[in-house]
Length: 84
Image (cartoon, rainbow, N blue to C red):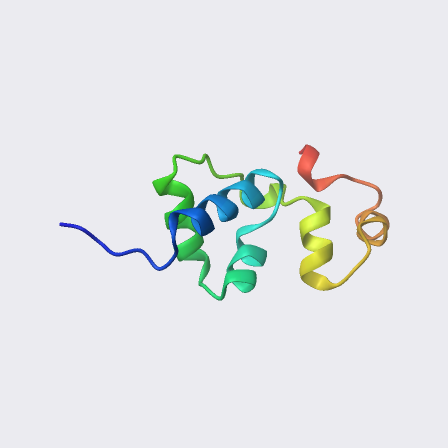
């Protein structure tokens, strides 16, 4: 059975590229107006391996919360969350 997808192949490729560049599924969902499960389905459809929940990059979290990445680093005591 064929399932019509919400986004064109081009947009799905953009989502995949942004995720692989470090963007979180939460930020991508908000950017594209979709729940995380839709973003996760797109990533799965394109064979993208998901990151662990605790490995969100500071850059992505900073954008999500409107904070400077260096400020976030200071908040977590200089620990880079994506290096865990």
